[in-house]
Amino acid sequence: MDIESSSEDAVDRVEGSAPAGERIGMVVGLRPEAEARYLALHADPWRGVLDRLTASHITDYSIHLARLGGRIYLFSRFTYTGDDFEGDLRAMGEDEETQRWWAETDPCQIVLEGTPDGEQWLTLPEVFYHA
Image 1 (tube, helix red, strand yellow):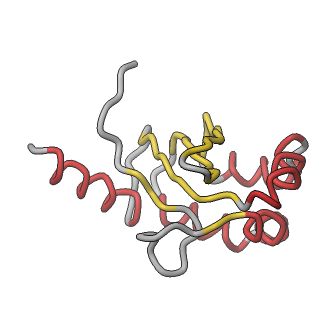
Image 2 (image 1 turned 135 degrees about the vertical axis):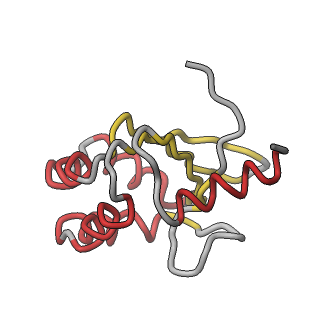
Image 3 (image 1 turned 60 degrees about the vertical axis):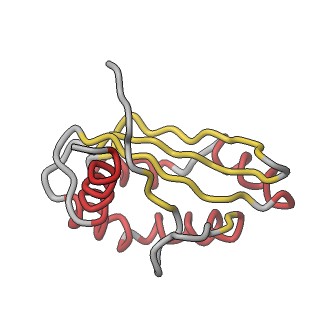
């Protein structure tokens, strides 16, 4: 399997369903004027949001910051351990505490070109992993 078809398969899995143990990476821009606010929110995340992540079978979740070419990007990486990715994401999106959290964090972010309509973060295909 070549890299291009492998990458397409990875994107299809994330947008549709993800098998248990799937590692998922995503990227979004960060508005420079909102950096301090975004970092402060993540220094003390809301318990309800963390509980919803756990209930949605999202584990080993981290967000990294990168400054590249005069811009700021956020890279997230997590492992999905459930068996109904779409349902778990839907439950997260319907959660009131998570909706309030996103109302705080989304304005800090810049949706990147290529991100599907209605999505905030751009899903990245995994091209290498070593355990």
